[in-house]
Length: 115
Length: 188
Image (cartoon, rainbow over all chains, first blue to last red; front, side):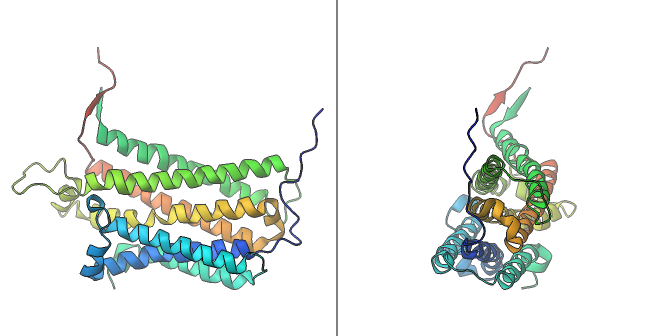
């Protein structure tokens, strides 16, 4: 006879959304950093050479590594601050989705080349 | 029938990891839209919840493998610089594309967009996997969390689609070739 499986997660009451909010906002920040650093590396020669972490891949290696590091640091800090709190998620979502939308637009070369 | 090592890597990166990611996206979008909707009344068992958690983690792993192989294995072959005086640019895809006004757009728009937009995919889907692993069925009663996970997953699908499309067109116009030749089978 099969035993009933235990519940995998707690009820939503008492489960603060802070952890989720931290992950969402950090993902928006990380995505935006990819676009921002790519544009910055294109415009500043010194930054471009500094971001050349792995020569065969060129500045792309530094742009993406730096963006991932910023994303993880932002996530860690926000997680520590918000994990046990309930956050007004509407505003966090709006900011994160704005950053995500901007990163999609700013990685598009005809728009990136405007800067 | 033979294939070069570089072609094989490109195939594994695009048709293996990338295409599999795109296929997996449709499944998770349907699950999140239907089963985890606040309006849905069908029960979600812990087994269903575990399945989607593992599914999302597998997608995140796929996304990371795809961008890492693309950036650190295939991209260096793509942007290799030909020695001065080289006439045949077949082994130097970026230079080959830039050598003609008919193909330069595949590099200046296609590759320039693909190499950056692809990195939004692992960031977005890792977030979705972690949030789902933490909240699971509770996303039904946290519609704003679910909406954010859905939007980021949808964006990752779009970004992977852009990268996949341009990847396919780049391979069509200037394939990454070279390296050891692998004999797959002998023809009759």
